[in-house]
Length: 487
Image 1 (cartoon, rainbow, N blue to C red):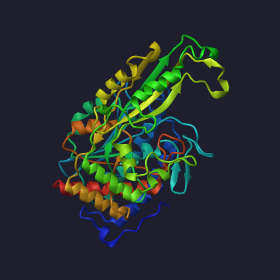
Image 2 (cartoon, rainbow, N blue to C red):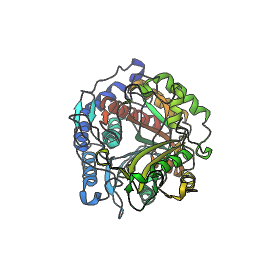
Image 3 (spheres, rainbow, N blue to C red):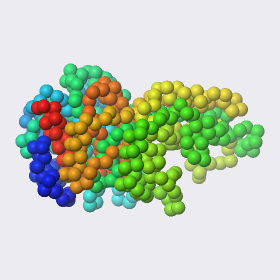
């Protein structure tokens, strides 16, 4: 069973009309009896995002995942619940759920059900499509990132009904292309605009947490510019005896990357990729670093003897949330070592992932990156950078007093610890679009991707007690939202 934290007497009854002990007990029971079995089935579906499965229509895995979530949600005993699957021609489907409310405002809850690819390195007995529960952890691809979202969002609303607590009209939007950069979502937001209205509160369940002991609210998300950098030096491979005459394509790549990154420090050289970090974000990073300390890096799967980039935990948090950083995520033109003969290879390609500060202009950054890498190719080599669609970052608006009070109350009631705030190093393309489209909305961006959960990598898992407690926190926020908006 999912264990329950201690609920203090002062936290039992909230101004939002919820009894914390009863609410948590219901949510934990619903998770154990309904949510976890559904997630086990969901993990077994290789519902890779279209970027990683171009034949997704023929394979049918995304449609299977959609059908699973749709069926489970339709069976919930929630009065007035309406569940539909929207399908625009040539695009991945979207699930839209609507629950009538008792106020004029609207709450939008967001998640996705598409998954990252398999990745290698899974431990013995584990695999991306093999659901395995070990204690508090459910292993397998996608449960934490973030297949749990649909089940948690609807369970939170069901908890309100059980407690007879009022809430605003609630919409739950679950997409199937987030891991591909949400290319289809703008079209759906336009098509569904009359239904969506103007939400006063947006809850996103696709983010992370610094630990599993308290509620974490995400204050910012980085943008991203990705693409493939290719250097060609020959029309075909030749004997490596020609080395010294023809420069290696790999060496030229190293020179080009040095235009972008200081290989000694990891700092991104061009200043146009940097922004001034807001003072409140620096203060929040220091506060989070005070709670997490060395756990920021010590719980990562570092090899023996490996050290983090900085000793200061606060600087590490700012590096992962507000400073640009480069990662090489793929390569082509390099044979496996066992197949590598003494050949000077004709070309090398690298997949670049440049994370951008939340407030940086991603479109401008993509154009500038291409200019930097392709200008004046060393030795006259053929250099091309093919960018992917850039993704903008997001910086959360200031929380209204009611929301700040609500998340504080929720974390104390259901985790027994105060709420914490932290910027995330990843991207959620939908948030940038929503922030622009609904500039007056309040946002709660949170999630279950905590220490060792390893989203996108091997041994990904969902920490089940955190999933249940977070569900209860969402219920609390929805109840408080109704009260604050005059319902």
